[in-house]
Figure 1: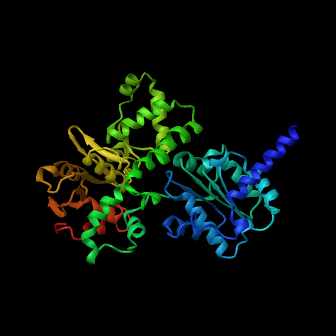
Figure 2: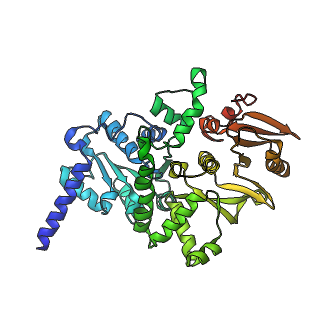
Figure 3: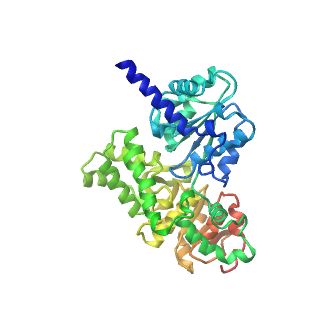
Amino acid sequence: MIDIFVSEWERMKMSTLAVQNHWWREGRVRPEVAKDYRRPAFHEAEELSGTRQTIILSGMRRVGKSTVMFQLVQSLIGRGVDPLDILYFSFDEGVSTVHELLGSYGEATGRDFQSGRKYVFLDEVQKLKGWAEQVKVFYDSVPGIKFFASGSAALPLEREAKTVLAGRAFYIRVEPLSFQEFIEMKHGLKDASGGIWKDTLPAYFSDYVRRPLPEMVDMQPGLLRRYVRESLVDRILYKDIPEAHPVDTELLRQLLQLFYTEVNYTLNVDSLARDMGRSKRTILDAVQYMTDSYAVRVLRNYRPSTQSSSRKLKRVYPYHFCQVSNEDIEEPKLEECVAASLLDAHAYWREGQEEVDFVVDGAPVEVKWKNLISDGDYRHLDRFLKKYDVPTGYMVSKSESRVRKVDGHSILTVPMWRLGEAGGLNGPSGTAALSRGRTERD
């Protein structure tokens, strides 16, 4: 009876592999899963595909990590790799060991994984306990295998990989769409920064804020909120975190509702523990799990004198604005969340009654969702620049664009859409794009 059960289990595993690896039968990856649009993460991974190192893709759910993997599979086939020498497995569909997976691959294809060059794609690999140690064993003992791995829990995934796979891996972060990527996918425009397209950018940006994930670009407006809740937020709350940690999902739900409603929430663990009837450690653990799973981002109070940030007075934002941009949230709060995402913010500044929304590589950034910025709106930026002798600060507005110079310091006021166009302060266009046209009214 046991032998019959084991045989049936092996048959089911091989059937799952055959379904996930349809190119074994069809000779190519189906276009519906290997999309035509190639994102920067694909080009970076393709360039590294000839190296010995494992390629690790990390990023929040629904950003397109699996799509990048399928595109890489098709790229390999297009370069002459035998489809049977390429194995893909998603650990969303069940958990095995890498050794068992490779054994099942051999039984399903008749190929010896230890012979010749093989390409192995491990999707949502964070669900496999001890995955890095297992990959290391095969990396060291079977040099013909090239591993690609992806995961939706950045910190644990990268921490484990960097500890175990030191010198054996390259890391690629897959983010939600940039504004430029959205314009290319939605409107087919490679460059909309000038000419007749310039006046359309603010309207395009408003649309982008509500559709920054690949599957959302052409989705009907009435489905956007449901898509984010069911495909992204609920998966984190009720699947990703509980599968990895013993945690009360109701506590997670309450905290996440609080953080997504009160954007820029000052984290008071004592108060939360008291109000929710939980220990401080339980609250801190829950926040860490949500941070690891790309549900929230935590900002610390910037302390340049020690080149670090304060452990106290943390602030919590949604990890990315897509998680709240289709919810009923006040527009100024949403736009502050948009700026936090575009800047990939990790710090803010507060000292006494003075504060600045974000500090990015030592540069202060304030968000004022107004058409016209008054002199009084600059006072905290002025104070920061003078106190720390920083040459340039930024004011993000609703529509105003100009430069303000005081006491040898400059503050560039830019509309939010221009911050998106630049890809943030450190994006592809960076401060040069923010400076462009800075004396004009947009």
